[in-house]
Image (tube, rainbow, N blue to C red):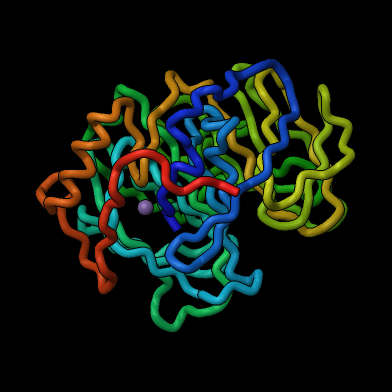
Length: 323
Ligand code: MN
């Protein structure tokens, strides 16, 4: 599920990314793409929106939508310069990495891998744990201060929850929401929260006006109210609703069972360069990381996994075009 970005997501010729504006509502369709046989909806990066705070990648997978593949099997592959944030609504995923981590994640828990200078990992549905796999994998770009640091992996089985209103609850994955702070490591000012509602719920989320925010819906739908938001045309799965900066609160109205993600953060320090599974600043850094993975040296180490190692694609001009 920690699918690579392709030139469809971050075409090298396109540097017209919007910088953040005051409260806006910008709705961008997610792109459907394939990650090891499972189709995912990629809400970030999009051509017109590369980052929301330091959040730079958002894949939503749901094998309950009638996929052919019903289990996840992503072989060993490398990362640099980012944190992978794994969150499940349903299913189980086993994470193994080159630090020796061997960690099962279940719904309500958080797997957080900080790649820094380099790490490799594999993720798969464990034997006998078939059934629907529903969740999200997000990436956070690491700032210059930490992006070349030692890699780390953390599992958080107990995350704080906040009651936002009748029937509406938030689990704080990263950062702070209201007075609840996630124990997860953050390298820049940001927040990530999972919103869960039964039927006919509503509530208000206090926001940091210096952050930009976006909402990604995983199931159900979310009506949003605030400056420029009248609650009509609810946000649904398959899109990114970018809300800009300058908001002090967001009113959320839900009519059906809903799972959604609220992502926010201080506008990132720079436009990160993303290629395959790497988040960097210069093409030379990407080339060096690609070569290190292809040579199998110590930078990315070894992952104990029954799955085949994933080779890096060739570098070069964009060959795949989006349709
Ligand atoms: Mn990955």
